[in-house]
Length: 504
Image (cartoon, rainbow, N blue to C red; front, side, top):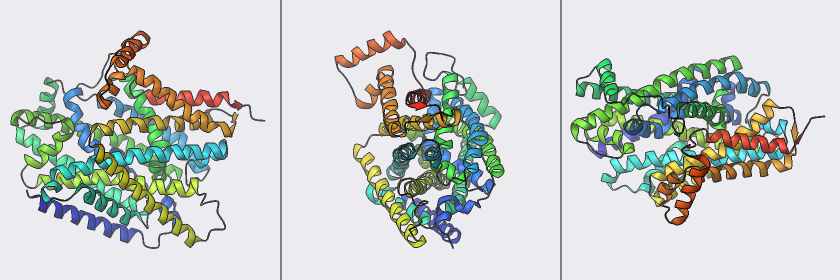
């Protein structure tokens, strides 16, 4: 299929999103933008969150992990599942009881203004890094496989995509993206299921026979029982649990949709329904990955894991499947990008500018400043994506996502200390604790996982060998995995304990 025809379908898809945005943003105000006037349908939020939580990175990368690791990623997914119960029964009741628009307002009530702004700042940093890294990866796939043949520059592609996201979120915010995420999740799942069926038919397999052959080749192995491995199942499950609690439950982007639902009871139903759906959807992505490797072995395809799905879909699946794949890929990209842009605007306006507290600002002034902030974040997104392109190394995604993992540790420590203790902290010192904890954890991780840093940054020399020897003398064969976030949060918690006292 020609690149021009695929591009035409992409433009048509953008136009559809703009129509939905225009319809849903009529009579929208600041409350519509921030929390959808607390009138969102819980079923739409639950379904739309699938696209937001998975993102384009999942669409491209998770199938590629099956070759080297089998279904081991499902260990993390099981942790995700458990984490949603903590969100439903601990965090949501707290946020609704306090009637929060920004969840970081909790930190102001519990500790003070410095802790509040520190938490919001760590979220803003994390979300900028994570969202733009994911955005770059998917734009790069579109550029390599479609737009390069049309001689369209990468910068033009990134600019147009961000412009479209800006346009359909500019007015309606959360009120709009609840509906656009639902539409995009539908297309994403449709693309995934159609591709699974196509490959099974091409291989002459049913679902049962596909699973049988995947099992015979060792692709369906889930649990890693090597306690020293970073992929040990307890590390993965517990790490997945805390990733969900922090990167969903303590993340303004994810929670602003949940607290846009009318009642806490409906919001709980939304999260619990979503927790079961995510088990099924991630299994389908892993099944897709296994089928891709079976298909690739019959066609002699040899490519990087992240390029496997795009290569097979766009070059070996006829004329219709490429259209479905591209729409599915964009549908996986947009819910994470539009939600991040909206959440960053909300957090900066409410947490940094204090828009909710400014009774001296008229509604029109608030609206004008909110739009200005939204536009500035879109520019930041563009510059970050172009920065990743300048580095021009896909491994930068792993680096940025790892850094984003460090930045969520202080949020975990702050909220955990506030919820589980009744002690007050020296608010002025909290920012130093929140900076010191991830730096210390990074130092430990650098020593423990020096091989990973060596691969990513091409380190060499006697110093690397010395660090390896030191690491083996301290940790032996033990490797830190996804539970890194827990250590980060625990150090923050202990630091806050040192600067705390009993409440009067």
